[in-house]
Amino acid sequence: MADLNILHKTGIQEILSEQDLIYILENVKNPNHYIGFEISGKLHIGQGIGTMKVIKKLQELGVHCTIFLADMHTLINDKLGGDKLFIRKTAKEYFIPAFNACAKIVGADPDKITYILGSELYASSPEYIETLMEVSKNTTLARMTRSVTIMGRKEGDSIDFSKLLYPPMQVADIFTMNIHIAHAGMDQRKAHVIAIDTADKIKNRSIKDDKGNKIKPVAIHHKLVKGLAAPSIWPLTDEQKNDSSVMESLKMSKSKPGSAIFVTDSEEVIKSTMKKAFCPPLDVEYNPIIDWIDAFVFDLIKDGEKWLVKRDEKWGGNVEYTNIDQVKKDYMDDKISGQDLKNNLADWLVELLAPARKLTEDQNIRDIISGIEKYQVKR
Image (cartoon, rainbow, N blue to C red):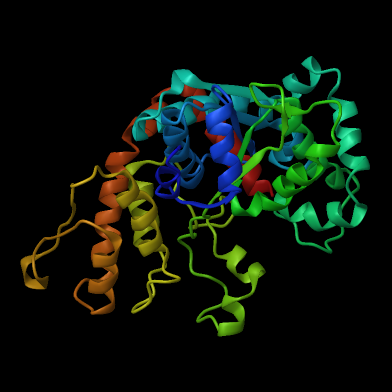
């Protein structure tokens, strides 16, 4: 039986369902996985490193992995000024090399990752519209309206009609690409559940095992890493801690200044961003620094290795950690400061992201990054 623990150790928070995933791994040779991304800005560490941590383990399980570059979804969601040519150029000439660099960083095989541009998929798949219609016919308008949260919108927002096409398009993508394992952050859960619920009703593009039996896609959702910027609400009340919209606001966001570190950031930017990062004293549950150390440091260092935190002798000298629980205990006991954690995490990230940062030596990459930043400033 396939060992799913290696997925949970990469930050996978939910599998719908584990039993179905085990069945796929045992009854489909090289099952198809995909994760999709809007081309909405620079690639941050949660997208690049976080995604590749999971892909590395899926490759070890014999899964064929695909990254879907959702240029048409990007247009619907009003990103990068709706500049179609620039969006596609960014997808092909910035996103792909940045993802490949992240794959090498974590030990995944970039040569075994397929990249698919949305507009090219639709142009080469004449039955896509029929699949989209089938998904739409088997889902209610109310459910689609609730599902606009997958694109960073709030339920009840005033939106143009095209945005109601976004959820069924995402579901149709899964069937069109014959995806056995749909992968995303927890914020994409609603679309994946629609895909699972409608699978038995889709006649045009059914997903099957190696014996020809019709099966449902499986969804795997990774935890959303917290943003580094201070939240607009702090401290949190018990009621707010149970409010999904408040929790959603704490996640890393490329559009919120100081919230994210991007995989191509310079050493100076990484250290500056980390220096300003929110690190509330005597709090490890809603502390982004603790969250990042758990999600990146202890997920990526090899078994048996220790994370060295360097500090001045007058503050106790260097200390080593083998797991996040030790860090949490020392932080809550006030044996290590937030500044020590931030300084050492910054140094660790500078070294980790060096291969991705090297991409900025290419003038074309620098021009694309500048273009992205100009669009974000305009917004």
